[in-house]
Length: 476
Image (cartoon, rainbow, N blue to C red; front, top):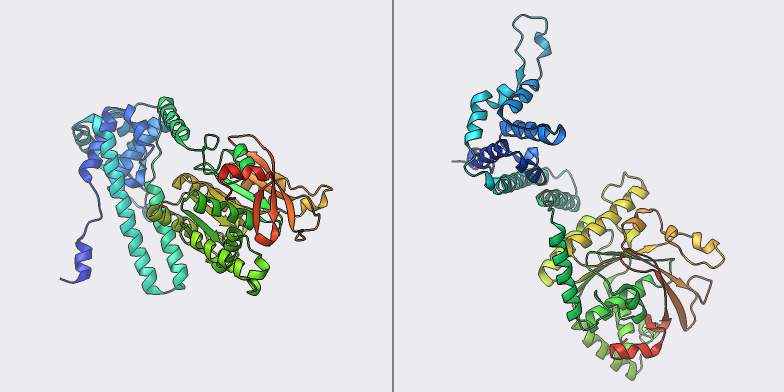
């Protein structure tokens, strides 16, 4: 037997018994409809007749707020055309009869069979889950066939085929996500459980992931799971350095795994920055290879500490949110990453390049928030602000200065704006500069400002009040 004949003999994944039993349960107990429709759509049913019946049930009960039984459903299906009349025969006496959905599904006899097909009405949710799972596998089979056909056609470049295939698969995964409604009592219990976990932590005032900066931790209580944090500034103010300093503390001091997505710099540049920051050696001397013996010893010691840190760097340029999210999911599953940092938002490739730039950035911002919710980790995205701040006398950035989309401000749980107060000229640094971290938005906490010291030659941010460092063992 040929492969084609084997494939042709296979029926798509389905469970007709579960479909019939579910429809019978819904007809017998209309209260189950509201629970089932949250997770089940018409296309989840395999049989066309079952699709028409389920659509009729939901239309009557949900859209029209009418009770559904054999009589009301039969009347509704009788009013709906299953096949449009053939216009070729409109002037002939032998024209085809118009068929209703009632006749298409099998009429009174089949509806009566459905009524009798509900063995246990209370099992409706289980039947619905079976129908949905079979549908997801069916969608996957169909999509895989489409991907195979496109691959054999070779009508697109390989990378585009991969991106398209991954997008199709993720769309199926999203179809498998179900909405879940819980009572306030359940939510309160979860809140108490999280509160107990916070009390058990060593840092009583930091419920999230500590940043290593006391004033910032006091203001934000650390970076919280499920939150999107935006760190924004004009170019050359220190966004990347600030993010790497925080990541260094999280990975080296807190010993937590993290992902850094660098769309602007190569991983070797990131590694050199981290070495300078950890070892406190002059970055310019490192780039020129002019290190004395003391600095070389400090460099090797810093390299040993950093090599033990669980930091994963993805420096692939021109990535889309689809690829970033897929990589973050894999690392969450394999290594349990606790935070993801993306440098920077405006360099992420849009999914649809035909959209306006504002729509593209809005879609990226929304996907970043979804990623934080899905992985239950903080997601930090660096972003640029426009030139409006330079036209103001104090040059201080504001939330309205975020470039290209107001959706960034809307989607973010926390927005931090970096401002260098010492020098009005961008890119011009003294040996040390005071950097203001303006927390312009915090959905679940206060806003305010804190100060840090940026040591340019070490590419290192320090607490403004040096005696604070003793609280972190002097390792800041």
